Image 1 (cartoon, rainbow, N blue to C red):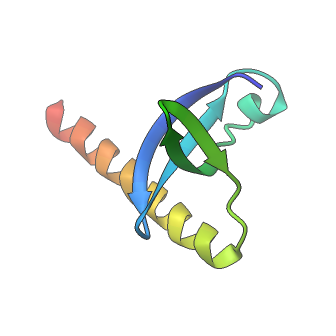
Image 2: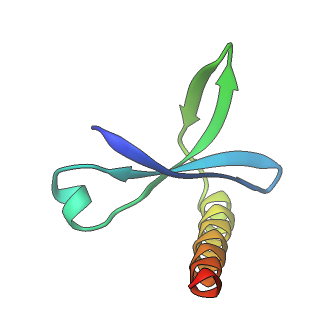
Length: 77
């Protein structure tokens, strides 16, 4: 599945990546996939988020990031 990187962001002392599918049903629905993110020897590593608690923390951090970007865009205009 080909995806665009929306953002790499920190939450809960860990980095995460938000990916937006480029085609298919997920793209049409505007779904975003979020994974734990790290790099090893210059290669990206993605890991699933296993717990609901971790997902809630990360989803809140991603929402805040989107709100900040929207605010920054409004200020720039």
